[in-house]
Image (tube, rainbow, N blue to C red):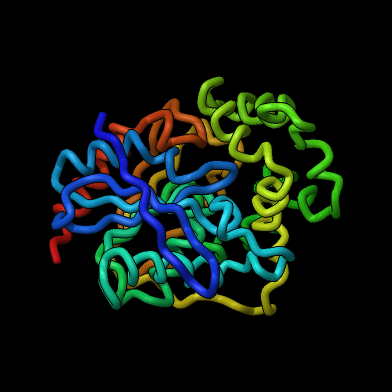
Amino acid sequence: MLNASVRSANRDGLTFDVRELGPPGGDPVLLLHGFPQRGDSWHGVANRLAESGFRTLAPDQRGYSPRARPAGRNAYRLGEMVDDALAVVDELVGPGARVHLVGHDWGAAVAWRLAARHGERVRTLTAVSVPPPAAYLRSLVTTRQGLASWYVYAFQLPWLPERLLGANGGPFSRRLVASLRRTGQSKEAAQRDAAGLADPAALKAAINWYRGVFSGPPGDTDPPVQVPTLFVWSDGDTALTRQSTELVHKHVTGPFRYVELRGVSHWIPDEAPDQLADLILEHVAEHPA
């Protein structure tokens, strides 16, 4: 595999670490990770895209980059992450530049909002595992998604999640590793991601993503996504139910494709990087600029 270089991007006093792979003149692809991962979770996908001539940028998002770790749940509202992503593109690609946008888990939530509210900055959208925020929130109260998302409610509690999932001075939290393994993640990937949250400040920031989702103004909804959109879900996902995906198409007015991966867990970028990369490459080829 190719080796990524680490760049920096800045916004409002925060500095984000960004893994870059591929030719400098290649069409830019922004890869947004979810919980509890970082930009290195995209390496298998990024390598395939880079080999096809694309320039990939995979930032460690707010809270995951050590120099971009503000305090308080309000600092982790979805809109802040959207502005972070745009700042990364502005600095490393160019002011106002357009990108192919790919997000998994929380990264998909950021990508949905970015594409809905800043469609002029997005050439194509690929959302992996997680539906648009409005569709997800509706599924919490209308389907069994609410039961599958029990941890979202548990993370609203003060200090207790940090105590239960803390590494306590070790290289990683064994409890967090065990939890990730139960959702289908490999031992190697689970230990990698848990090690990234061994710092108590990093763990608190990651959990604040869940707390921030409920701290935004009520009725803060997005317009439909108008850019070409690919949504990828896997039937082995224990975090996102099939019911949560059934309303996705209602939030897209542009070209839309849904793909379901069989026998794959929630951790699609790690578990099926070649399948996902093939889908992204097909999607981009079908919708040239």
